[in-house]
Image 1: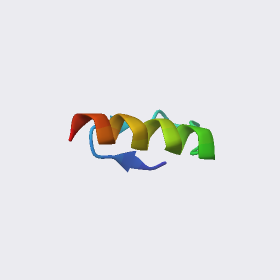
Image 2 (image 1 turned 30 degrees about the vertical axis):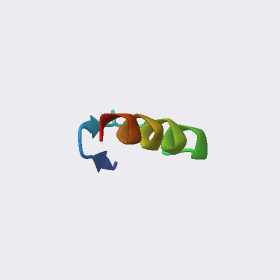
Image 3 (image 1 turned 135 degrees about the vertical axis):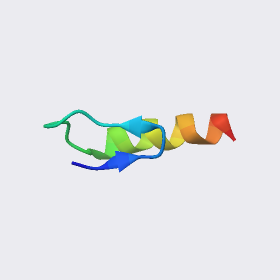
Image 4 (image 1 turned 90 degrees about the horizontal axis):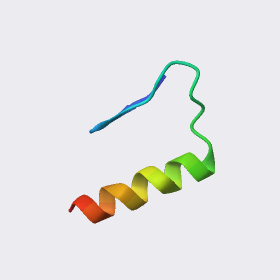
Length: 31
């Protein structure tokens, strides 16, 4: 599985487009 900085994904958690969008959205808010 993939581990984004600050966003460890649980095993079996698929990186769907929706999930990626949520992660990127939160990442932008943090910066």
